[in-house]
Amino acid sequence: MAQNIRELITLQIGHHANFVGTHWWNLQEASFVYNSSSTSDINHDFLFREGVTSQRQETYTPRLLCIDTKGSLHSLPAHGSLYNPIQPDHSTSEASWDGPVELIQQLPEEKNEYLMDLEQEDARFLGPADEDKDICIDDSSISNKVPDFHLAPSQKIYDLTKSVKVWSDFLRPHFHPTSIYLLDDTLVKSARTSGNTDETIWGFPLGSALFQREEVEDEITDRIRRLAESCNSLQGFQILSDIHDGMGGVCYGVLQHLADEYGSKDSITFATTPSQLSPVIPQARILTRAAIVQSYTELSKLSSVFVPLSLRKSCWDFQAPSTTFSNLTLEENNPYITSSVMAAFVDTASLVYRSRTSPLPLSYVVDMLSPGGRNVAAGSVALPLGLRFDQAMLEWLQQGHKPNLVSLSAGCDYTVAPISEIRVIRGVPSSRLVRPDTKLPPGVHYTTASQLYNEFLQESHTPPSMRMVTGVQDPLKLNPPFPSIFSGTFTEDGYANNVATTNIKSAPCAAGLHQGAGIGHLLQHLVTAAEKLDVTKVPSLVEEGLDKDGWSGVVEDLRNITRNYCINNIEIDSSDND
Image (cartoon, rainbow, N blue to C red; front, side, top):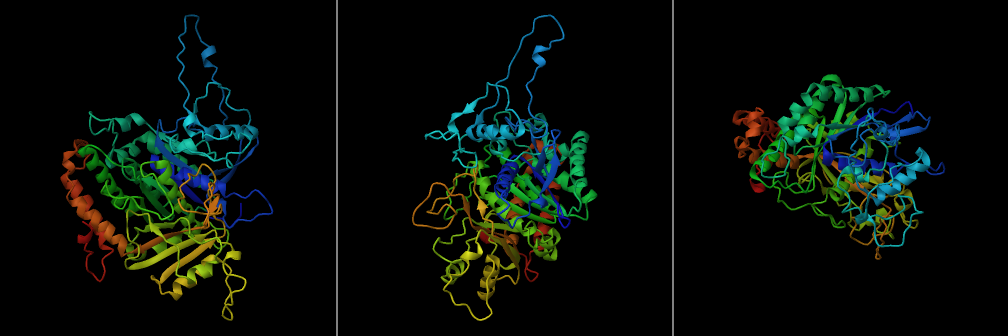
């Protein structure tokens, strides 16, 4: 590992956050370069670590801790199979007494076509495959085409939209045996808001109390400690966390621990809310909304930067329209689909601090995005970029085009009174910047897309004045199991075309992290709605200490956070947003 690498630890907390994280790690592994003749602008050492198995096999795994509940992994063992290959269980043939034995065999979890292919591919490198021959195969993911078993999983085309039930159903990289920690699901199930429904909605207070259980807190903090001790120069943490249920409370406990033990380290929290979220009964809706408000309030206070992510145009209204993208078709109720867009954003935006050439320290990113105590920021993505296959980027910009960055932060309009921003552009090689016959002014020479894009923004006087534009030449690699979400006509490398292809392998794209008054409008809307919420209608919240007075304190804290976004000492008026 290079001596100048300042490592980052990734924490994923919650089932939907792990959907996003799984796509993200898949995207990162897809961008690995194995050919010595090829180069990459991405330095994976920031997020990955080297290791050796007991069989002396070298490993390269994410510096990661995933937190979820038991029952959320299906066929994936919590300890993985990289360091401890799955062995057949011989215990049934080793009874300790001579009496009759009744054998009850549990059917194995279904494995979709992708996981089956991946298992076969792993067998060539990690040893024999699972000896259990009674493996269930989910036929819903096998398309009606000529079998192509000779193809590697990264080369086949899969349709996993119906077969993916949990995030491990499409996980490609191997994790370290201690990367996954599962909470006792019986505690979560006991938090059902009604005995007349199967909805399992558990609130922020229960999640916080669950983290404080001695065995839970000790195990989570010990795993974080071991990750930190494996770093030579830890610079901080990046967190993906659900905020719509008790996982927000678990994240609150984790962030408190980071503040106590790693107070000098920075953190950036990506707070995810699934677009398919739609509680049925009134108590469940109150519990979910209370969790969102508490998470915005408490997690933002403990994070260096807090970035809410939601593909609905409101974090409060569960019936609000979904965010639309001109060249994407998304099934809004399918987390496998929607989480892929969030992952594309996180993968691209995080390049600002994990590129190979002049990566920014996380502390600089934090300073850029949190001026004057404003540390809630918005995220945006342009997927794909929109550049045509027969155009140079300079020509495209001069014709009035630009990356269409779509807000991923609950409809937040990041263009309102912007203060600062970081933009990342990727996938445009130097050969596509300027046509060979283009005459540039004396002394003008473009070497990177970020240089060209930054100059365009400056010349067009596009605010804000405090801006960082960076990028890499590596495109977003869309290897399976990334879903087929492109709806326009594109070449296989993601450039707009007149003829559609069925297999888009990569795409140029852009992402942004924004600070400005638009965030204030989002927060003020949340404050206004939270003031009208009656938490006393949910007995479990009252029992856990969140009575009317306690809720008033939460709302007041959120209001204080919102006041940081006042313009000219005038509080933001959100009446247009109600």
